[in-house]
Amino acid sequence: MMLDLSAVWCPPCNSAAACIAGDNAGCGGLFQGGVTPELTTMADNIRANLKNGVINWVTLLTDGAQQGQASTLADLQAWDSKYPQENVWVLGDDSRVVGQWLPTSGIPYFVSVNADFTYNNINTGAEWQDMANAT
Image (cartoon, rainbow, N blue to C red; front, side, top):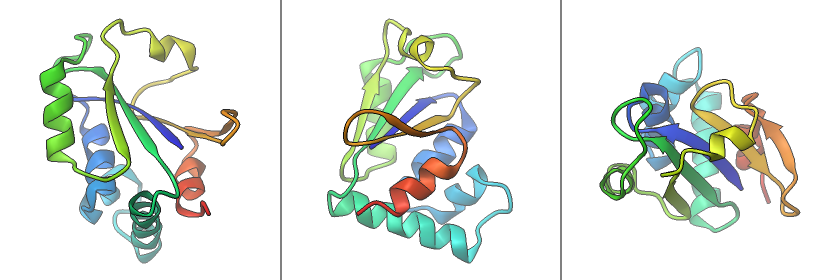
């Protein structure tokens, strides 16, 4: 499972969501080097794994449209409509405490979580490969 801490106001967070929803240009906006064949393959594999139920993805919107402001139900619904993808759940953090549980250095912040709920990779970029290579 991928845990994705994002915010509505955050351009790279929107790029990540667009990438997962099927926009390879969004992938290129998230990773240095732009859209490459390798990046396209990785994104395609992640989307296939989502569609086939091999992996799940949880996007936690820590902020709404303005930095420091909690996301609202309207924000969650708009995000889900803008970036539709099977097996991606969009949640809010209206108490704004989840980010305090993880050693976040900023957003977007990605954590690949194993079936036993241990962390595999935390915000290194390798967590995307974890999702692409999941079986």
